[in-house]
Length: 592
Image 1 (cartoon, one colour):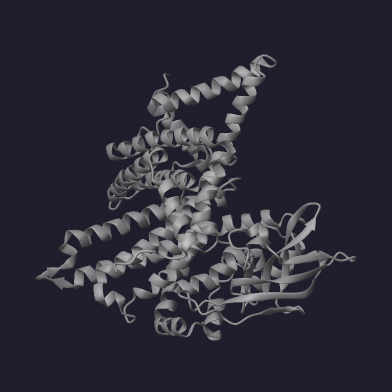
Image 2: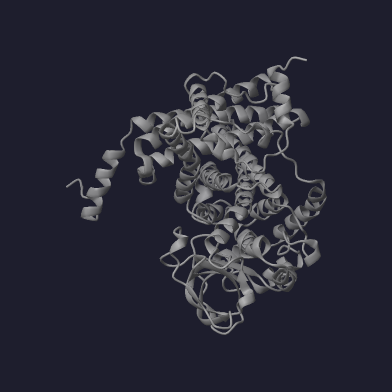
């Protein structure tokens, strides 16, 4: 039987997940890893049954606590009774296995729970999320059986609350420059000294995951389990924050703290690897929270627009208000699609999802802040008043583009990580050219692969088509991404050839590459989900397809602007403006 594009696409879509491949990294080569995107994943049946009960319980509990939540925000602290109620609901054992007394939820189900808590109160999500997403995640990922048996039952019940201790006054995004240090003793124990800042749950935690310099042969940083009750461990006052005020944030200090040898977490000297794995693995919680916040804001803004009348009719009938609600909906659907795709990769043991994690965090955190702005705008003067439910989310969500790696750092990470393998392929090409007659089979093989890829990028001929069995609207969406991914690959090659190793210093250009890649990844997740819903949901599936179409068209315009700006931009002038302001330390003009 002849192989048609349709049967080839169907076969590709039914292929098993390639766990040793990254969708995001393939994009920089001009490739769309279809089998890791289609069909869109489903939350496992076991979690679906549990989620219904948990979501209903959260809604019932948090609706009854609205007055208390306002008090916590005003006073800057959750009450001990409230934290105990979170324990009683089992919210500290969401991702801990049933054998240790937890619920054993998947990453996808966990993100869905944080979406529900965030729909009511972001500070509650931080208390729960700082515990599960990062505080105890190192124990789950790198702990040995003895460590898990000792601590996980207490962490699942909430008897111990967990906190993640990485950030220092001189080491924020630059995690490798921590000054807290641990000196190994003759008996194998460690003497820990230093201070961490802005630690979520710092003042209420009994379990700290602490990162310190160890200067051993195996590396320069290690991770440790530290109990709050040990001699020499202390925490500072509760920080007075702009948002998420109810959540507990303090400094945590260590003064000659003796850490037993058995509390080394993972391998000595591999602390940076542990920290990055925790942050990457935990980003579904932050993303899920952002999605939950957006859903609540869409509901509030829609009701406000239907109830408020101007010029004799509800303002939801005005085009510019309708545009805001539509755009919030598109952003929410896209963010949700990317976050749960990431959770699918984590739950199915994909080896490298670090770029996808960064992309989903950047997009979701910025989308929810746009939703806050637009929903408050729809509420107009009322939105600016504290008695209405808009100003608190506006303050609360501002932290999300700073939390767990600033979005600026994550954009650089996306671009540089994507370029790394592209650069290696160019390096292989250079090596092949220099040794082509010493090893002609290898040399010509590398040249042939590169030539084929470049031919696809230059002409578009041979570019894989995504799922040709799509509806006409979604087929148009797929063709947009097929074209745009080639432009990303061309831009990556061009910049690497132009700058070589100096590419790491070209932050304007790296941001453009990252934004192109983010639009592509989020857009492909959105397309995949829309394609599944179009078949499974007769009521809302067609509108999901329309959302995918709108997102793709908007993304295409952004991508085109970024591609053009790689060659034609104002980067040099911006640099000179910054230099002038930095030298003078002020804005130098005035009208008189």
